[in-house]
Length: 525
Image (cartoon, rainbow, N blue to C red):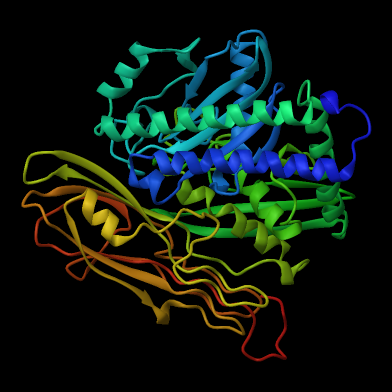
């Protein structure tokens, strides 16, 4: 079994792969259990993965954001290129949040730890999580250039041979509003990577592995074959789809052309809107992540998450578009565009595999509050809001469950403990569900007031006000997004001053319905 070269027993491969998944999942759990912030500890906006020494992703945690699927692999390639194959030393830890290198905005910090046995590099552990603050503007889509969106960390050593980079730690501490939370979560990432590194070394010792290259090749090759088999089951051809977004003033469009040829698939976003001077643009890495996720969900949901899944899929997007933005485009709220990529893909594939896709869903919305408590202590806090999931061909959509994001809804009690707010309501909105043979999931209404006597700056990032989630195959549309102050509707993407005593309310969309209530109706939209 040394090095896993040559023919490997399939039972042994299954055992090894499950062991690697468990390592990555323990890595994610360590981050959650060690977290300082609610966004990591309760909402679990994170990902974790393990790699061989070449940077091939072997396994990703079950607990992880779809937007990081593939972006960690791309980021790993950039880090290996920057450091060089002999530049990794025992005790090193690397960090970056460059949007164009990893997951698309500065609030996602990536930490990479080389794994050594003695002096030999045998692999890497990597984690990514959304930090509560990164300086600049508070988390929003309002910036006109990426420079306004906070501190950008190039690929640097956070630890050099085991010694902390005190200069870098000081720079981060002095540039964020909540240094205790930011540095605490960063420590959780470093610790989680260390735990996973120890488990990888123990795994190699147990299995008698000299390196991970052989097992990586075998696992990813099997995954690639399964994905190619799933693609080959589709008819060859070309299909088009699109989805409309509220945008800023003028609507935006995500347009896609999908071409299937034998066992490969090309996804081309020609016709998509040009990048804009608001922070909703996506880098290509992030766009690719949601292409991979959508196709995996539709074609082969049970295969592992590793680099083999990605090999039969080619992704193109026009440079300078909202899905392949040029630097220095603002990208802080890139989820307001990127999360719609799966719906454009499902729209295109609806005529081909209508029983394997779902109606449109609410996408994740975000609210950030920044201010001072009555005691003068500053705070900054982000929470995410889920609407309803789209109905499926054989099931109702889930209530208050966003798709394609899986970031959790934080409990009201937890949020009230960490910021001076009182939640006045949190209820489902039954009438928001799109009707159909199977109904969409219900959105939710969340109301809050400040408990502090001081005003707070609020940043809101929501879509679906003008274009609610569409039904599929004859199903009806879900309800739209609505934000309000004391009952008066406000724009869903803005920053404003929330005064004490004013109720701020969020009504998230309901999911689209699937299928006509007339069972004899046509199954095309």
